[in-house]
Length: 187
Image (cartoon, rainbow, N blue to C red):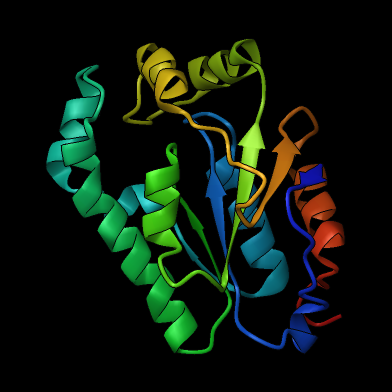
């Protein structure tokens, strides 16, 4: 795990300000699985970003057509609104969102604070194998290459930690807890 910027969030009980972790990366990297594990461990609010897509986006992807920026902007606005609602309420939270481009991440973090992106990254082969083994997901593995083509890896000036998806999800979650210095709820 690598961090582009120093993080000083301390333990979850001692966070000076609320923080929202945005689990980003192409489809198949384990965003939902890892975020759900952490939400359960921390007791934080969790939102599956795909649930915020309009039905037209889901249908488009399900039929093998990649989304355009025009398709994504209304969805990204909903993600940004969810993030801001947590921060305004003084709550920590976790949300999944591919956040493939810098401009998308800038929209999600338009306030410039309170958001840390957790970039789940791995090889094309690993991701493709994971996508092929998923059941009942609207995103077909045939769209992986279009997502990889759109991906702009986070820059050094973004608030992000990069996490390799090689280990099992529970171990990835544990490493994220350690990197942030967070403790599970009730500990």
